[in-house]
Image (cartoon, rainbow over all chains, first blue to last red; front, side):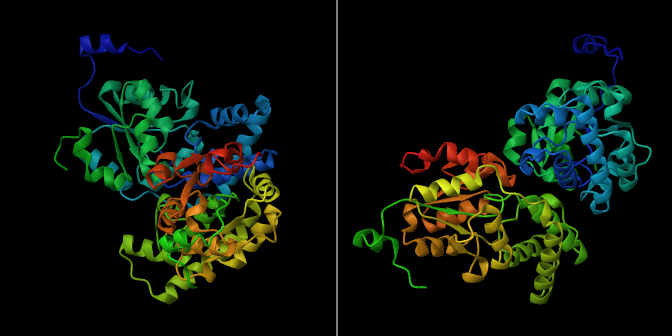
Length: 238
Length: 238
């Protein structure tokens, strides 16, 4: 994917100057973080790996592969590529079993609908695979949303690829994008993409963790963001 | 339960001057917070109450009654005493169903064993009921531990009663006690008891949340606390 360097793009003015919003999915638009956490805990246990649940929580939002690799490094385990793949499959099975518990976060549908109605471009960029993300779009009532998933880019968060690809698809320069996410990985990736990061508490991270990871502003959940949308550069009357 | 006021106790010197440690249970010694969170989420859903999971997480550590009452106030719901009791029963059923997933936190057994071996008095004070807490003592290998539970005091955390009662049973003045807990409710209760509060990250709260709630020091989990036990006033060589 060829991309114009930031400075050149600014000079050439070849990007639309409207703001755009790039959303993370889990914990940002749907209330799925805690289910992911316990699904990973169970998957790791099936794989013979005992790990405290809070450590899993603090890694959620990375891709499954990065996540398992990071945990293995921290715990000193040696895992083969096959091990990582097997653990990811265990997680997918557990998540599927528990997914009926998952709902949309308060305000998420209204926020997306309002942005669309106001002509503000937005997209969803998730470290999850497309097969898992599609049902969430149905929950959100936006089956046609621009969706970038793990399998469509080389590196997942905290690398910026997912957000850069999402900005590209919207035709908006990353520096004009606001990245909205619940995890520190979203906010680190936002900084690396050159975008403004906005944190939501709805994934269960603390406010200060998100601020320290570069959040320009932190809100409780999508409803709270919508109530303060003028603070993140959406200037249309809503 | 008659108690000597702090100032009088200090004057009269009628308390043992050794330090003592008062532990919270869930998220502090056993890895049960996330299971409690999803059990409450399911219980509330069965009761017709939709609430974001992170809001439940931030209330865990209060007693079931206080917890439901606080959530009802925040969400504007009107709940009868019967409703609250029914929700607590739903939670107990869900928790029981999921409890096989629960393990001891790293270092918990060794920490308790070491304190005992060094003659440092310690107790466990939990906002849970005795019937739920007893199996955790077996997991910890300390069936005979001093245990104060919700049903044994008038008010649970963030009121100080649980920790005051635990200090009383150990015969140690609260001002000589170090309260170890994973939630802001433990740390607020510690302040109200006149004890030093130490936070653990193992319940999934952020470090800064715990510090802002009055934690004198924050460690990752019981293993990390044991590695730094001299910082909290246990002066015996360990």
